[in-house]
Amino acid sequence: MIGLDLLIGAALSLAPAGSEQQPEYMALPLPPAEQLAERRRLDAALARLQPQRAGTVDAYVVVVALDSDPVFNREAREAGRVLSSRFDAAGRTIVLADDEGASKGDAAGSPQSLEIALARVAELMDRNEDVLVLYSTSHGEPNSGLIYKDLLRGAGVISPARLADDLKTLGIRNRLLILQACFSGQFVPALKDANSIVVTAAAADRSSFGCGAGNDWTYFGDALINHAFRQPLPLDAQLRRAAILIGAAEDRDKLTPSNPQVNTGADSAKWLSQLEQREPKTTSDPVGQSVLGLGK
Image 1 (cartoon, rainbow, N blue to C red):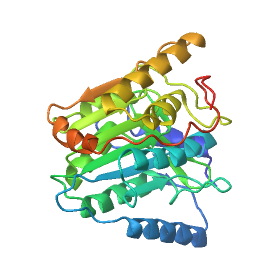
Image 2 (image 1 turned 180 degrees about the vertical axis):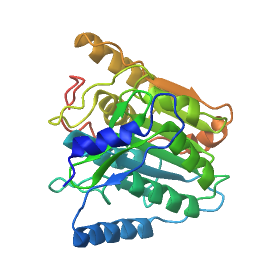
Image 3 (image 1 turned 90 degrees about the vertical axis):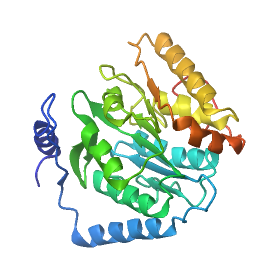
């Protein structure tokens, strides 16, 4: 079997700094029967997604863990529950993350499964009315993108240009895009537009923190999803609260600030106001190990 480090190095080498060339996904030889079982599970999850409701601004939530490190999969699974409640997206949420005990995702996360899920959402939604809420959690590399790394399935990179092109090609206009990864600020220039809100865990030249394998959350996920989004507050207040919590934790641990980014498109208020008219719900108390030191 080809070594995973070699695969990652090859994928990264396809996208040199400043290049628009798209890195490729490189698959490892998962046994055919397991590939079929995974594809059937993904197909079943996509089939369960409900169509949009005419005259209602529906949110479609897509959450993906792009790394086999347990912290990302734990974060993704709980983020799916929180975001589904926050944006009234029951039946319109898909979580692409590995299982762990009784905590289950809908299917495994990968660049391929993410693109397939986005394509299905684009089929079901009213692209002029409804909203994509995307939450991705993984490692990141500067001048490259989101790193996909799975010991069984493969490796690769999702570049800013690739994600932006996917969304444009699929015609998904109204977008809340939340990217948890080091150097994720590099996605802002490619993804920002009048109809989008783009939130990243770090600036283009900064690391984010908390991705230890034993953690339940990254710093960013803990602050935004596990704490701020559980409160019945407007989105702008939740984003501000998360930034304060992250800054306090980084100061406490004497870390270089990650400098999370938020870019709000001029026309995004149109769809956001419709979502916010449904009063945000208070969800259950924070769960898992809080890397912010806030407890449960």
